[in-house]
Image (cartoon, rainbow, N blue to C red):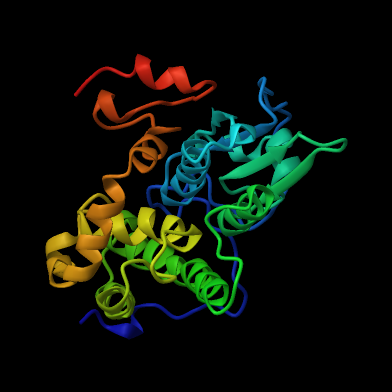
Length: 285
């Protein structure tokens, strides 16, 4: 193991802009906008500003599922926010999400626009707005919300913890990778045990809990993020794999995963979505 005495924290931490790493150019210890930039507004009541990271995919899957259920009011414009270029620090985006993270939603369907930020909050807002994909009776509702908030609390260990140190950090730190790999495997075991006894996280029905967890842990066990499938032996979590495959077969989930994606196979990309017909313009695989 790397000698832990190699680094001693200073008495006062200071920001070193040259700290390296894949996202060093956009990481900073202060909030607020860096530049003036008005956000575009499309023709639909719901305006989404996002990118197809796991947190962004949650919301586009949710919107596509709502449309598939016949909720015409869930039509939306999805605008691409290229976070590596710092677009999330534009003044317009910060007005929608003061935390400068994607996704961010503006609901213009009422007399006053409503901003909603944080992916879990957006899922809950949309579920309550349209009365869908969230149980209305106990104990199913409590179970659904418990798993939704489990995901919101757990994913930082997967993304900002394991994902950062395993895939993005400029140097490999054995202690950090071991620490977060252990926690991610524990989380996968939590999911695997739940899905061994229930077809979906909240019970018999597919809900916002599954929509929240699938883009993170479903992608992980299918080898779609961090390239760590063999390292974590994700195939051992058989119930999570089966659940991930089941959701991936849903047409709305497939569509949602494409929206605001501008990398990978061209057949998987729909950088912006302004109409359901936009999917017809994506080249076939």
